[in-house]
Image 1: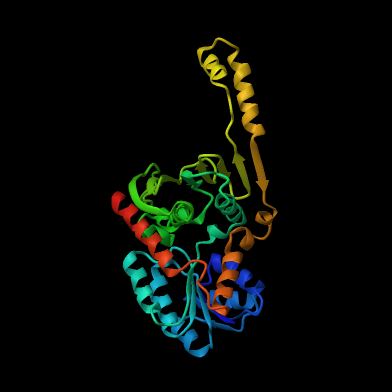
Image 2: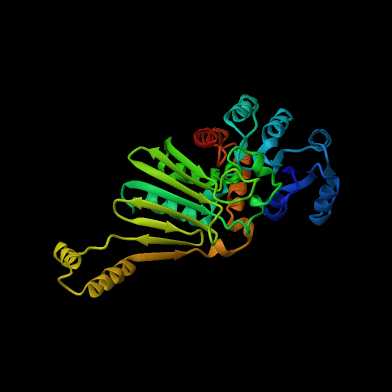
Length: 351
């Protein structure tokens, strides 16, 4: 399968190209970037024959079967439509588009085209999330009652907070670029039905930042989900907590911890509250019991190369298989469109 890459930035160099080079019977024949020097540099770095500065030139001159779009989302819709019209399958980085209107344009272009499109919702294919979904699907948690996702950044540890980054021209700024991750994670487990509330603040003094704190409350059948995002955390934190009637799961993307219920007799509990026994002793026993009922699952595969740890490898591999076997892509355009509708509704409440 012959592949062309559009966009030679960090995600292409660090993740997409190394991933595609590992997939059997896939050949990257060309790259494209508006910066000619960067396109040439990337082509030379990965021993790719062709490099271009215009998407239309690459599509006309190369016999491509798949186009991998790694540009900022401002260009996703026109580039995806252009590739679809040339009969190419499309791998599209997240977020799918800037808004629902653009997503609908892509869906119209896809209709009756005979090509497939996959949106890169890569966290769904992280080894730790795949393991968590299997635990939930087996019913070990009982009925799912809620889910909480935290994406907290230190301001100085990611380029997305830097002045001049393209994300600051998007609705929601930095969060417009990455809120898609917690949204599709919660949707995968709960099937989100609505955005109940969203509230944002700006706590920093950086004039190019619109908001740097965000809380979102989401509704689903018989459950609720919450998202917490920040640019002011003292350390980077990315966690998922899934709550069930029988057990809870905690994910930090390197480990899963199962928390089983701790059974404390009512008499001991009330005696602890009233202070009629040694509170410290009872508290220690409760804590020890909780630890003894927790099971940790460190995942070896999550410590390997970055593109495997990120989930891109499994997602891209499954997309290639869906093209070859004429099956549904691992993340469809309709699923991408649903996330854009939720994202648009969130930022309509706070901007």
